[in-house]
Amino acid sequence: MERLDKVLSGAGYGRKEARALIAQGRVTVNGAAALRPETRCEARDAVAVDGAALERGHVYLMLHKPAGVVSATQDARERTVLDLLDDDLRRRGVFPVGRLDKDVTGLLLLTDDGALAHALLSPRRHVDKVYRVRVDGVLTQADRAALAAGLTLGDGQVCLPAGLELTGEPDTGLLTVREGKYHQIKRMMASLGKPVVALERVAMAGLTLDETLAPGRWRPLTGEEVALLRGERI
Ligand code: URA
Image (cartoon, rainbow, N blue to C red):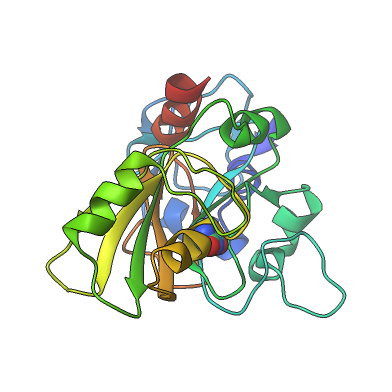
């Protein structure tokens, strides 16, 4: 048996946030509102926040990564994405699912579930990642065609076909890739002669960056979101 506030913080809510959610009547245990943080829960009890079932066991988080932090669990000199989390979560051994460069912002998943992370990152899975990319230059239909055909990078590596959606802003597009080569988007755009000026990941593996998350903030994934990650990709 575990206290309800601990169940929530174990799933990725901050302690204070967990208590506030309970006090606001937004947490249910087996369908009934539970208003006391000390409510005892068993592993088989269904806990939900705002009607969304909570994932129990592992931690799955969506972080809005800000610029200026590195996607690592520790670094001798730089702030890492783990420095943005509460101590409780760091102690659970949460790590980022893949990397975004220090200057790149947007959706980063974090978890302590090595198997799911491995599956999402496996080159054979071809998990979709969508980036909003702003370049120094104007994106054209010819760029779209070149990306769709599969670009060859400066070092001779060949990319899988990628999708480019032109947004109406001449220097900005939505680029979908299905692999994760080192500095991939920056190198793709460089090979088109249009260097990246700003890069943000807006979606990954069917999950879209939650617009209510300010840069540097995170939230637990709902049970449905975790099922989406598992079901569609594994
Ligand atoms: N492509 C890049 O160049 N950098 C990232 O961080 C992600 C994709």
